[in-house]
Every structure is written in C-alpha cells, then in structure tokens.
Image 1 (cartoon, helix red, strand yellow):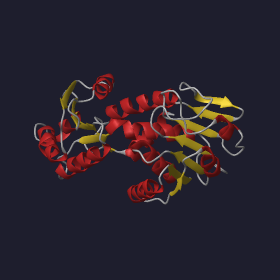
Image 2 (image 1 turned 90 degrees about the vertical axis):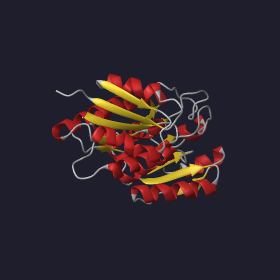
Image 3 (image 1 turned 120 degrees about the horizontal axis):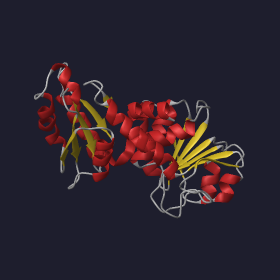
Length: 286
C-alpha cells in the first residue's frame, strides 16, 4: 500500500509546526512542508502530487493549506482547485490560522443537540476570519445572526463577505461598550466572543442578567477572557442554566476535528475541506 503523503503549503516564512504535529498525529506517513508559498506557486506544487501517482493511488496524496493569512489561504485553495481536471486531482484542506476548525468547533458546541434554527445568535467582535466563518455556519443552521464590531464600516464589509460566501443574510451591529453589548444581546439565545486575545467583550452583569441567553462561547484563552466570570477550560459549564464554553473547551474539539479531517483526506482523492465540510465533521464528533 502506498504511503500517505501530505503536502503542507504555508504562506508564512516558516511553515507551521502546529499543523505539522497534527498531521503526524493524524497518521500521515510523510509530510512535505513548503513555506513562503504564494497562490501563483500552488499549481506546480499540486502538480507534483497529481502527476506522480495515478488511479487509486491518488487518494494517498493530499494537500493542506495553512499559514497566518487567511485571505492568501483562500486564494491558494482556489488555485489548487483550478489545477484539477477530470479525476486527476487530490484532496485538499484549508485551515489557515485555524480559521475553519476553530469556527466549526465553536458553532458545534453552541449548537448542541437543540440546534440554532430560528434563534438569535450574536458574534461579538466577529470581523476576523473565525468570527465570519462562525457567523456563516450559524446562519446555515437557520439562526438569526448578528455580527458586531466597534466600527460600523468594518461590520458592513464583513457581513457582505459572509452573505456572499455562504449565501445567507446576516446583520451587523456596532458594539463598542457594555451598553451596546447589552442591547444587541437582547433576546439572543447564543453568543460567541471572537475578539482578539486579552480583551474582555462581555461583562458578568450583562450576560448573567439576560434570561434568554443560554449558550456562551469564547475563543480567547488569554486573560482577561472575552466573557467575564468564566474560565478558559469550561466545556459546557452550567452557570445558572447557561452553558459556557471557554477557549480550551472549544479547542479540545478543534483538535479532534483537525486530526479527523486530515485522516479523511486520504479516503478519496476528490475531497475539499473548507468551512462547511469541516463543520460537518465537527457535528459528528461533538
């Protein structure tokens, strides 16, 4: 049987050690790390995978796109898919800066067994890659999604990107202080804090006093946490009937999802793991 070969294409000057460790833990036999990869470089890299094996053996070669720049990663994924023709292709996964696996894990946790259909969900400080993907996935679950930022121009731009990418209709709101946070969370069932590390987004008095708010998630593990009065290790901690998921609780599922997606790359040669496909795996593993 052919060895499982994974091409790791990273746009940064040094390819991610994190992604390399996950690949090995997922059972990859050999890992080829390429750093400083630009979208224009992708086709020739992918050709190296496609033209060295054929038929059933193609499923034993796959590509992973990483790096810290998600926009570049998306362009690299597009370039990879444009390199394929007919059945001459390999499976590929995008997870630049952990965007897809983190968002998928967070939404799967908040969704739980009750689902989000018809429920109001808020993504605070959601104009980054994880926040936008989480908002899109929530909307695909049928939620009424509000994405926020301190600047309305950034919110409008982010919402337009999400709506086009996921074919949904999320709304935006400007939230720059606790009063605005309290107002946007009125009637909300779930909230995800997706802001930068070390910035508190939601005060304890605000979320504990909200009777409708039943699920809370935070992807920030650096003190102060995004949700005051919580811990990073919370993984469905029940606080007066509200289930709270901290960054480490979400991160545990993120790691499982990341490894499982890598494993599945080698089941066929035509798999593409972007946000939706990664989220489907997260829902299986929750």
